Image (tube, rainbow, N blue to C red; front, side, top):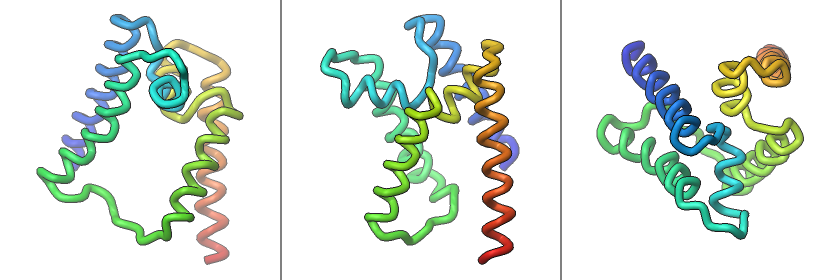
Length: 133
């Protein structure tokens, strides 16, 4: 399990560095998804990146079985969650991957603050939900 996590982290780092070197772009997932799906100008690299985001986990699950617990949620709960994450990403000028992986590695103070905010909020949410539920 640890070796798999390290390998996954190395692949994320390699993909981020490669995208910066070869495309001059930051691997912020929310921005790339926006470029691939909602922008009128077609950019093949963005669409290829998003296809890889979808196919990669499906390939791993097909080869090894699901890596994470499966939660049974109604379609509207998944949709609402996705919309809230998308709204938060736009409000926060980027997603956790963009700030946490790419922003911090570039020394962005805004990304450090955003990542600390994500982490503190997540810890507080888990703590409070554990007390309530």
